Length: 526
Ligand SMILES: *[C@@H]1O[C@H](CO)[C@@H](O)[C@H](O)[C@H]1NC(C)=O
Ligand SMILES: *[C@@H]1O[C@H](CO)[C@@H](O)[C@H](O)[C@H]1NC(C)=O
Ligand SMILES: *[C@@H]1O[C@H](CO)[C@@H](O)[C@H](O)[C@H]1NC(C)=O
Image (cartoon, rainbow, N blue to C red):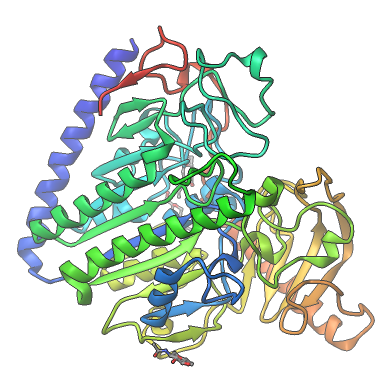
C-alpha cells in the first residue's frame, strides 16, 4: 500500500514537472527577459551576536563580514517567529502563523505540514519559469504531498526536520550528549537524555527518495555545499533564472565540527562550527561571483535566535540579553519574544544593485522576503489572501530607510498560546502582554506572566530589555494607545482573511523509514 502510494506520488511529481516545464518554456519564449536569480541562505539557531560584523567580540565569520562589507547589513531584522517550523512557513508564504496555520513545530510523527492551499514563494517562481531548488532542512511536513517537491521545488536534497530528530551513527556534540543509533548502543545502556530520538535514523532525501538513513552528520554540510554548487552550475547552464533555498543545519545542535578532537572544550566546538558555516557560505558566494555576480541576489539570514538551553553549544545574542526575563529565570532567546529570540543576522549581497558596505537600521523581517523577491522577479503575489511582509526593494537599493512601523512577534513556545500576537514592536518601542522564558542552560524556566498593562521597553535606549517604561508617563500612554490600535487592526484583518489550518495530528506510520526491517531503518543509496 505504502509502495503504491509512493509510486503514485512519483508519477504525480513527474507529471507536475512536465506540466511546469511546458508552462516555463512558453513563458520563457514569450518574455525573453533576463530575470535575476535568487539564493536564500537560512541558518538555524544563529545568534545576532554570532555575526562578527554585528558584534566585535565574534571573530569567526570572516566570509560573512566580507559579504556585509560588499553588501547591505540589516541590524534590526527579525525572524517571523522564534522557532523553526513557523519561521520557515512564514518565510515561504510571507504570512504569519495565524494566517498560514503553522504556529509550532512539526514532529517526526506529524501527518500534516504547511497547509496545501498556502502558496509558497517557490511555487510562484516555478510557475514564472524559474528552476527551483531546496537544499537542507525543510521542517514543513514530510508525509505525502507536504514534501518540498510538491511545494514548488523541482529539486530537493536534504533532511525533513531538525537533525537532532533521529539518531545518527555520528552523533556529534549535543547537550546532553546523544549516543549513536542502535544496535551500536542500546537505549538502556546509554540512558540517553530526553532530546535523543534513537528509534529511527535521521533520513536524508534526494527528491522523494531516502538516499541515506541514518544520515552521516559528519559530511552532511559538505554534501549540502556540493549539491548547492552543482545546482547553481546546472541552473546557470540551462540559461533559465533560478531560485535556491539553502537551509543550513548549522548552528543547530548536534554540532559536527569535522576536525574534532575528544578534548575540545565546548566553546571551541561552537566557534569551530561557526567558522565552518561561514566557510560554507563563502563557497556559495564564490560560486555566485564566478557565474553571474550581477544577476544573482544572495540573501543571508536566520530562522530564530540561539538555543540557550544547549549551554556552551548555543550562540550569542550580542547586546540583546533580555535582562528583565533573565533576572526572573529562564532564557530570553529561541522560543521567546525577547529580542534574543527573533532578532537575527541578515545580509543582502547583489553587486551593482545593492550598495556596498551599508548598514540599514530599518525595521524589517523575514516576512518581507516573499513580497520583495516577487517584486524583483516581476511576478504577482498569490491572490485572495493578505500578507504580513512588505516589498522592501527600495530599502535594498538604498533609496529608502523605511521598513515596518509595526511588527508582531508571535508566541513561540515559552509563554502564551502558540502563534498569538502578544508582543508588538512599534518603532523603537516594544510591548509585551505576556512574558516568559524558555528553558535555560541551568534548567530554569521563566514563569509565564500576563501583563494587563503591557511592559513597554524602549529598544533604542535599552536594547537589553532591562527596565520597562514607567506606565504613568505620557510616552507610555501614547505608545500604549498606538499598540492597542495596531493589535485591533491586525486581529480584525486576520479575521477577514483566508486563513489556513495545519494538521498537527500524529500517526506513527508517517515516520520516514527506508527499511522497516532494520533497526534505525538502515539503508544507503548514496
Ligand atoms: C566600510 O565603511 C566603514 C565605515 O562606515 C569604513 O571604515 C570601512 O573602511 C568601509 N569598508 C570598505 C571595504 O569599504
Ligand atoms: C478569500 O477567498 C475567496 C475565494 O475563495 C475570495 O472571494 C475572497 O476575496 C478572499 N478573501 C480575501 C481577504 O482575499
Ligand atoms: C485554505 O483552505 C481552508 C479550508 O478550505 C480555507 O478556509 C482557507 O481560506 C484556505 N486558505 C487560503 C489561503 O485560501
